[in-house]
Amino acid sequence: MTQRTRDGTSTPVYRSLYRNEYMKLNKRTTRLLSIECAQCGSCCGEPMIELTHHDLHRLVDNVNLPAEKLVKLYDNSELNPGEDNDWIYLSYGRRKMGLRKKRNGECIFLSERRQCAAYEARPIACRSFPVDVMLDENNKFIDLELSDIIKTKFIRCKHTHGKPRSFNKFRQIARQAQSETVSYWETLKRWNGLQDKGAKSDFLKFLKL
Ligand code: SF4
Ligand code: SF4
Image (cartoon, rainbow, N blue to C red; front, side, top):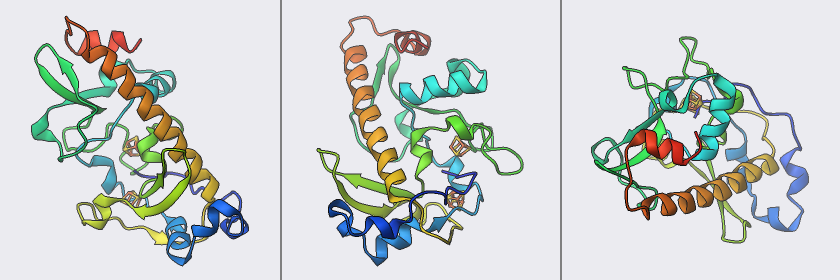
């Protein structure tokens, strides 16, 4: 998603190149790390900006809005085909949790100036976009990839290239995303195992929101 400030601050990626885990970084991955977001906002309206309860807690604490106003539960017809382990089973069918959108399909936080009004608390899915970091089950770096929705031209990303950003920063985001996603799936498993599942407000209460 849109990155609103340039995060070109940290460790030059080159320094990392000679450490074990980072030996895999090559020209291609260094180029991915050098992507600079042009803040066009095109990616801030993709079919669904995924949320976990960790994202939601951060947003609620930061933007002064209740979870009910931030969340939309999307049904199958509104989504791209994807993984099946994050369905929420409710009294009226199954849904996935994402950020609400405006009528024009853009994220509720995308301002008229194409800036993220929730930048500090933006969902983890927005933080390394448009670069995906792949880790193995032991959290070791596998590879960097340009996000699929850019590769398939589903979104026309107008990024440019500048100074490479910190690989460590990307890896940190990926690790956080991995651990928060697993924790969300475990929470969903508990909810989905309940006899009486209820509706959206019950689900949010279950998430302590
Ligand atoms: S939260 Fe911010 S960065 Fe993420 S989709 Fe919305 S406007 Fe874009
Ligand atoms: S589509 Fe690309 S350039 Fe536009 S806001 Fe998203 S990441 Fe930035």
